[in-house]
Length: 158
Image (cartoon, rainbow, N blue to C red; front, side, top):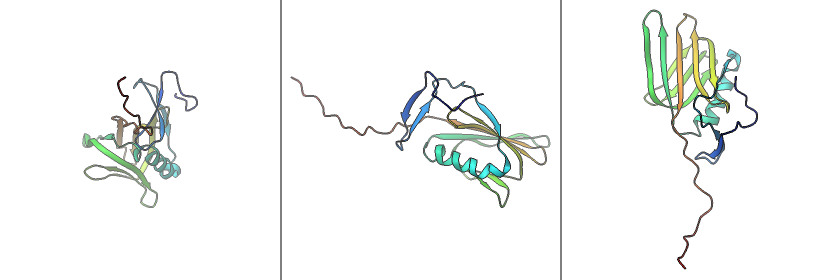
């Protein structure tokens, strides 16, 4: 499993478009850390993820696949822009705020996540009471570096 401590060798620091410094991985096959998120921590967990990554990186997309014994495998979303993920404890519902309309999962029994070393959630598996599973795969499509704060003057020929 991954570690969130020191930056692994080969990773580089860049600034995203909001100016926040983040660490990128040169290898998309880096190990992921899989954990079960307790239901009483869902709101805090997804609020933090949304605030730290989704609101700052404008190029995240999600595929949401529903795996049901009754109706088979179906995609609720493919390559949709992901704006945020929220949990409403009052309605016991996890909601994906995506381009083209939101996707809501009511009464999640279990929620599992697979995180990269920097905390970016690459996958979410939701198990419902009826045994249906929903798998959301979040893709980083690229990060726009922040513009340079220094301005260079063109050099004059000698």
